[in-house]
Image (tube, rainbow, N blue to C red):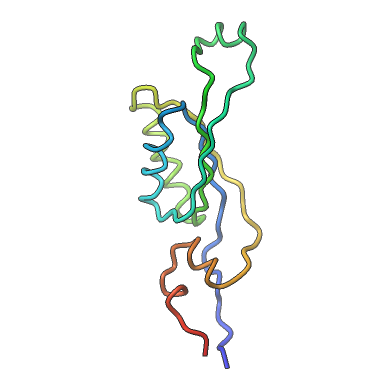
Length: 125
């Protein structure tokens, strides 16, 4: 019989990062250093009117949006690293924010998403 244990010691959040097109791979690689095992990236176009773009000095409205599932205890460090890169990487400006995930179905799924290898390798008794 399987022992009832605390399967979710670390909450998960969805980290959304929006950066200039062409910088998505750089930022996705950066996020992997924080134990992110699942990322999805999409390319899109901003919706600001041309007059607003001119006022803000925006020439290109193409963006990469990265959705990453990350442990909540790693999110602050990831956001800090992103903020640092937004300020130091040429053309690397962007925004990032998190949203809580309320549940994940399955012990193996949670183990993969939270980078908890001990849960992935356990066999059911």
